[in-house]
Every structure is written in C-alpha cells, then in structure tokens.
Picture 1 (cartoon, helix red, strand yellow):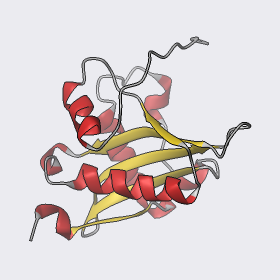
Picture 2: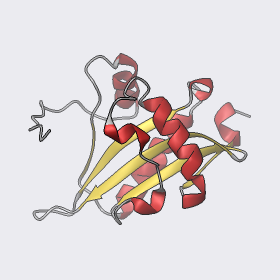
Picture 3: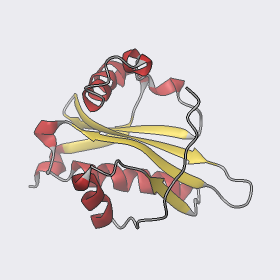
Picture 4: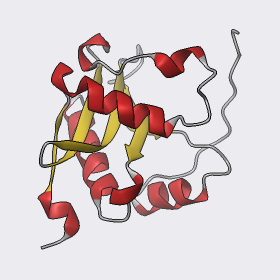
Length: 147
C-alpha cells in the first residue's frame, strides 16, 4: 500500500477550520506581519465558485487545495488553483497529486476551458510538480497593486 492510499480527500467543511487555519499559517510563515495572516480559514466563507478540499490522515488535516471557479463572459469558465499546501511531514507521498486530481475533477464538472495556477519564480519544486501534473507554462502575468 502506498503512503497516499491511507490519505482521504474530501470537501472541507467548517469543522475543518481550525486545522485549515493551522496549515494556512504554516504556508504563510514569514508573513505574520500581514493583515491576512490572522484570518481564519472557514470553508463556508468562500464564494459559491470556490471550493476547498482537504487531505486527511485519519482525522488529521495534512494538506489542502483551494480552487476557484471563475465564470467567464466569453466561454464556459476558468479554474484557478489559488493555494496548494502539504504539511512538510507528508510531502513526496502522492498527496499533492491526489489533491490536484480532485480539483481537476471538480473543475471538469464545471466545464472550464483551462485551469490556471501561479507560483513564485523561486519555487522550483512547485514548478516541477505542476509540469509533471501536465500544466503548461504560459505567458507573463501583470498585476496592479491596490495597497
């Protein structure tokens, strides 16, 4: 049996909020001075087009993926993977792949034409992972900071 076989993936519910918040803060370690850092990750707060899936080892949350469905005026829509995080002790066990496949399945049902994920230029492992999962590199993105 592979390590990932014992890990269950499910849609997050509000009862998962404390564990999701803990993982979210681990993801953003170093950003404690940012206003968002003290937010609580409560699944029902997300818009109807957003979905959080959580990876659980028994009752313990060990990873999550936050997926956004964006309905587009010109086509069927676009999916966005906003966050993907696996606890350090559970990495390289196939959990990220299971979470991606769950997110892709959800977005396929929404009939999106593409799924977008962004990552920092310095995150070489993340870039290799997404390439291995079949994601293609696109063009550069621009953003306009509002704060």
